Amino acid sequence: MKIVSIETFLVPPRWLFVRVETDQGIAGWGEPIVEGRAETVATAVEELSHLLLGADPRRIEDHWQVLAKGGFYRGGPVLSSALAGIDQALWDIKGRALDVPVYELLGGPVREKARVYRWIGGRDAAELAEAGRRAIAQGYTAVKCNVSAQLRHLDSAAAVRGVMEQLTALREAVGWDVDIALDFHGRFSTAMARRTLPLLEPLLPMFVEEPVLPEFSRDLAAVAAGTSVPLAVGERLYSRWDFRDVLPTGIAVAQPDLCHAGGISEARRIAAMAEAYDVAFAPHCPLGPIALAASLQVDFATPNFLIQEQSLDIHAPDDNELLAVLADPGCFRFADGHVERPLGPGLGIEIDEDTVRHMAAKGHRWRNQIWRHADGSFAEW
Image: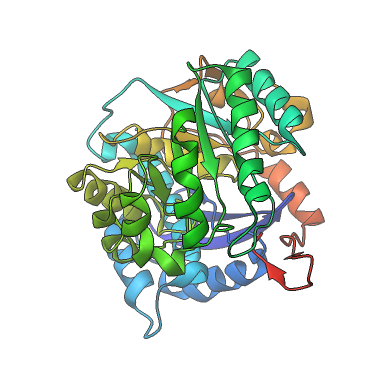
C-alpha cells in the first residue's frame, strides 16, 4: 500500500481537513488546524507531503518521527498541527485496512461509553443560567463556560465579584448533580488566578481551564498550592515535552488537543505520562467532527480519561452545517451526557467527500477577535 495523494480542504466555519489517499482505494481523513491560521497550516501540510507520497501509510510511528523531527526547526502550533492531521488520517487508513476501530490498535477499549460536555454562554448571569438549564434539558451532565470578559492584570473587586456571581447563578440553575467547568482562556494573570480561585471553591467547579497563560506554566505550582479547585491545562501545549514540566506542578487535568498536539500518536503518549502523575485526560476539542472522532478513539483506550469536550450541537442537526460532512451524523448521538463506543473502522466516521468539496469551494478566512481594554491596550481574548 502506498500514499498517492494528500489534499487539504478549508471547510466553513473555520476548519481545515486533510484527505490522504492510497493506491488501494482506502482514504483517511484528519483535521489539521490552528484556528485563525488555517491557510498557514494547509501550506505546512503541503510542505510535508513530499515525505509521504509513495510511502506505506501503515508505518505510522516512523512517519511521525520523520515529520516531527526531520526538519532542523521543529515543534510549535503550525508544524505540530499539520503533523496532527496527517497522523489522524494515517490511523484512519490503518484501521480501515484492518477493518477495526483505531482504539483496537491502541490496546482495545477500556470503557463502553464516554462522558461529554458542551459549551454554554451568555452575556450576563441570567443568560448563562438559562443556557445551563437548556443544556441539562438536552441531557448533558456537564457544561463549560467563560465567566468573565477581558480582565486587567489586577482587576477590581467588582470584576472578581462578577466572576463569582456568574458561577453562582449557573450553579443555582443546574444544581449540584451537574458538573461545571470554567475556562479562564488565558484572561487571568497569575495574581488574579490566585486571588479568584479560592473564592470559587464553595461552588465546586469540576476544573478551571488555563488559569494562567501557557508562557507562565512555571507558576502553575503556586496557583495549585493556593486552591482546592482542580486545574486543567494543555490546549496550547503541543508535545509530551511541553507537558513534561507542567505535569508535576499539581494540575488535575491534561487537555492536549489532538489537532494541535501531534495527533493520536502524541496524545496517547501524553495521556500515559499524565497517568503517572495521577492527572486525568480530557482532550480539548472545540473543533469539527474529525477532531471529535479522533479524540474519542483515544478516549476509549485511555484508563485515565475524564470527559470529552465537543461543540457539535447534535440536538439541532439542521442548524449545524458541520454535521453535513458526515454520511451518518448518528455516530455522534449523545444520551445522558455520554456517547457510545463507535464500532466502525478507522476513526469510526464516514465523511461525505462531495459535501466537503462543495463546502471547501466556499472556504473561509476565520480570524479570532482582537480585544482591547478601556484604555486602548491589548486584552487577552
